[in-house]
Image (cartoon, rainbow, N blue to C red; front, side, top):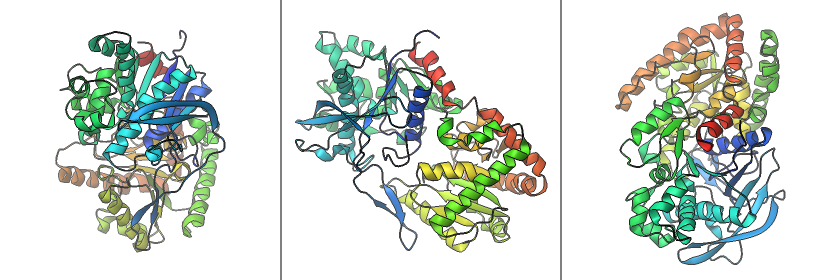
Amino acid sequence: MSKKPAVAYFSMEYALENDLKLYAGGLGILAGDYLKGAKDNDYPIVGIGIKWKQGYTQQRLDNEGNAYDCYHNYTYDFLEDTGVKVNVEIRGRNIACKVWKCETFGNVPLYLLDTDLPENPDPWITGQLYGWFGEERVAQEIVLGIGGIRALRALGIHTDIYHFNEGHAVFAGLELIREHMSTGLSFKRSVKKTKEKVVFTTHTPVIQGNETHDIDRLMYMGANNTLSEKQLVKIGGKPFNMTVAALRLSKISNGVAELHMKTANKMWAHIEDRSDIIGITNAIHIPTWVDTRMIDHVDKPDDLWALHTENKNSLIDFIKERNGLALNPETLTIGFSRRAAPYKRSNFIFSDERIIAPLLEAGKLQIIFSGKAHPLDDLGKSIVSNIVKMTRKYPEAVVFLEDYDMEIGAMLTRGSDIWLNNPRRPKEASGTSGMKAAMNGVLNLSILDGWWPEACRHGINGWQFGDGFESDDDAVLDEHDLKALYDVLLNEVIPTYYDDKGTWKKMMQASIKDTMETYDVKRMLEEYTQKMYTR
């Protein structure tokens, strides 16, 4: 490969270490793994993000099992003060942004912008990740995008490519346009010059989940950054769609799995002047998420089983310490941890208790759940409450671990026997937790959505259910998928676990071998470089 281009990667969140609370979920996990992989493989990449004073919500359960949100201020003594401040204008007022540097966790440099300064009229802009409402989100994205470009300039960091991880960073594109226009170039020429250096990763396969803002709000907040209303509409439409703007300001875009690429191209087919959306499937940072002994012993099935048993016992001990519940290490254990959103169908397995209850009561099955709802998502919180009710109904077989974070995710993807995933296809973008499970010898039982259609060999390295069925009618889709889930669980998964350990061990071997290179972040970085950065 020729000389690697210098890349500035913009993301609203980064998951580098459990107690560095700069992340909410999968978007941050990907970004953190990307920065670590860049360090391991010597890529000239820097990250641009925000130093969140209170991070994302800590989600707790009250005595009735209802989720509520807690916030407190974090201090991090390992961040390096760069001595750099940059300024942005928000609501007509100057906002200073202090720039911190983090490279403590085996990552390339991550520069974090911080408005929590005494001279600022709005010090709380960088208070809560995904907190508050529309105006504050715009303010945060001005800091990330416009402030991020200005931080790169102030730090003297040469950049060949600007990579936007989701549409949150799109105001960086407006700042690049402003820079070009300030040299006398026309708006049209400035957009063209900007597109030559921007690439974009889109994640959200639901149109409603892609962020939009009224044009007058952007003008009032100062996000237009000297551009006219007409020019804003030309970029992002009216209302202004952050994803549409990113698609139009990038030379190339990518979906995060092959199926997601198809879904995204279908979603945005009507957008004129947008970049092509190719498929680059997400990947994981193996040293962070995988017990590498599993990879080292992949050719020794009995060793694999012994190591898995050790990880399963560690998970059971973790649950005993957290929840006071003693699970049975001999029982088939399903893990399920992801954001509590309706399309992910977190409590789907309980849909017909006539089928699932006897398995739980007879000690044939135990299920461990975790996951947060967005603080403003009441429906998501009701999903959590429903799962908690099941933990009280089946106290020896169903567990919910509150305040889902990196530590819980790592424990579950190492110690479960089965990794369950049942989104409504095709609404899962990628699903990297399944990759972590697979490399740890935890067998996937999943809808053919996200990354799994590329990796699944049914009955060999895991199982699929639903056969890729899709329907615009959620009730029809749910009925179809539920029947398929119970069929595979009852007739394939449970008999293999209890009656054919030899086959189970072979499937663990296949799961690890099929994923340990294909879904390593090294492959993802190579594809980004070849298909996006140097194209």
